Length: 519
Image 1 (cartoon, helix red, strand yellow):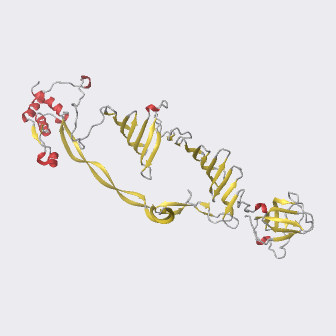
Image 2 (tube, rainbow, N blue to C red; image 1 turned 135 degrees about the vertical axis):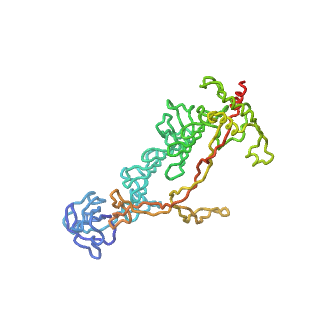
């Protein structure tokens, strides 16, 4: 059914009473209602009794094609102010547009509507809607299934998206004169007021205030501030978050962290806490820097450098301090005769003078001389006395690794370059000029495919152009499916070279060499 307006539609009727009017045919020079209306269509009519000129009624009528009748509905105006009980006589029934239902400029050139201003001939597809059944919203814009409306009260105005019936609130924008708020599904998620911007809180207390929200089940109550994703699968991201102690809200012991994470596991993070800087990896704090020290967080667990990644020079005001208390050692004993002989062999071989190969490659003959023992000589002297050289801490052998590149084949969305035009205002000699320019951009390549349900049947939704009665046809639901391509990505990894780099702990070696004399 639809509401119809048409010209030159007029018929006569001899029906009496307050019921439906049976149509008796078109008046001279006019059209019948059947020529302009379909079954169940509505229209406004003027009914006048020629035999009793004082009897008239302007009302909403519904056309019934099977009985060729008009069922009278809401009365716009009449002799009695309500439905008229027509007496005998021939009635003239005309299709009209009542003055109260017309949009006409007033003396100021203004027009007004109390409800919907439709588009496309369908009353339910409103371009503009004012008033509303609940009498609370000022205006609304609607399509077939979604819309937006402005709601007013005595103190506030809210702009919100709504469903097709204008009953369910969805993502409202709310302003009451003192703050602006954005909500999702009825829950406020952001507020801007004179204090600042609050995210997840309706009472911001700082210029940028983020409400507490636990990221996990840890006692520290992690509070996420921001997260930056690097892949569509959300596997790699950088996250900033704060932390609060578990037994209260004392932010003097709080921390702030910037971390790179894989899924929910921090691969690496930097934490600022209590005037200190903490470096961590995989959820474990490793190194702490304060105003007086740089130290590992956990005692005796991490190394400074490694066999394949060495420091070139270590500068220090004093020597290193090595743990040497009796209570930290077990198996304390004197050197054996074989160990004394091995120490004598090392001494007899004597220290050597040499240049480091890396320094020669870099500086040539300007490379400086160094004095020390040769690790292979120390090893050979121990083996010559039947000793296992690798049980002694002063002799070291570290595996050498190298970083190599490798490629993997991965899927990623295929992109295509498109050109679009946009309009902008440029200043030309101080004059704003509206110009049109061509802009190149990339967008995902793909196609719209029909959606099916779990049984493989097409999913249909209302859409397309309304029919003559204003009903929307059912069309397949479509979903964009991106086109993917296989690409080669280069990555790096550490691999063993099969080589070992020999080294010596000189302080321990010097102590071992004193065993040669028993001193």
